[in-house]
Image (cartoon, rainbow, N blue to C red; front, side, top):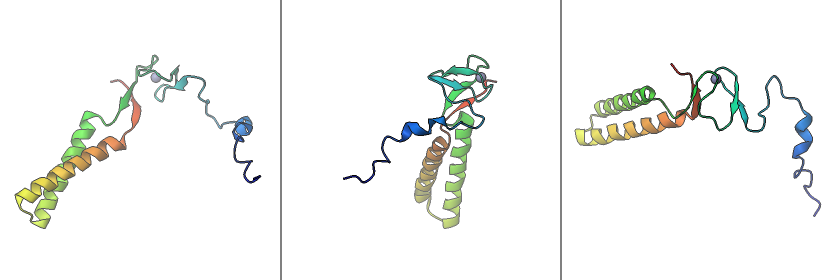
Length: 114
Ligand SMILES: [Zn+2]
């Protein structure tokens, strides 16, 4: 009945703790990781330096991942001496896995415009 009361509702007691060297995220504001300028949290492009929010891997990163998967699939086929029918499936699987890993590795991030 009177078991864990201390667990719930104790959230706003810790707010007095100062954050070390970091500007806390103010209401609706975020700092640009490139130029550290303030901008709205919903912004997709930094108004100060023009950095863009990027989702997932870039095209070239994706190409590298897919090529890596392709190489891995070919290697697998050669090493196991699988037939080309099996090899094709293995290569396709490797490419798909590489693609998924490639996309999963990069969440959204900010990239400086070139
Ligand atoms: Zn910026």
